[in-house]
Image 1: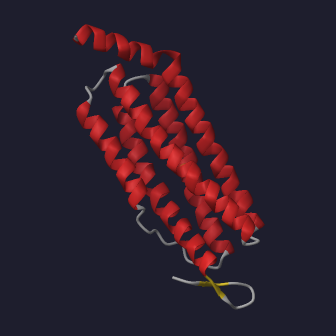
Image 2 (image 1 turned 180 degrees about the vertical axis):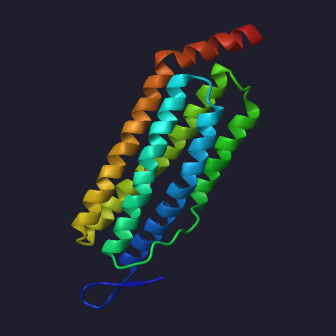
Length: 177
Ligand SMILES: [Fe+2]
């Protein structure tokens, strides 16, 4: 797909930017369901709350992407992201492989969720940079807010892991041995 710039010329960079937006749109929409499953599967209240909060933020992330499409005069379109699909598959796998109600389940969920956050941070970081390059300051500002929230979520998950869950999981493993 190609887009047309203000001068009426097709730009490969703009086309690439549009594809990234479409993949982010697909990712965020699917993440809403994935976060719901992660929330239901989590053991600790703190982690369930963190997933619930990020689910609310993710709804905003979807809306911001729709705004970005609007600025570009394009219909929002979701294009599957192979990278994100792999990370979602990782998430399902850890739920299968860990025991419900265990701290080990939470450790595995946090790691799976942080992989998703880091992937999103890479995508939004690139989108903000590309938007700036293409002179789309409003889009850069809009997606910069999302980037900040992805970073905050990543930090919050680290704090939850370090507060007690990792230690609890370590004890579970000792008992099992
Ligand atoms: Fe997001």
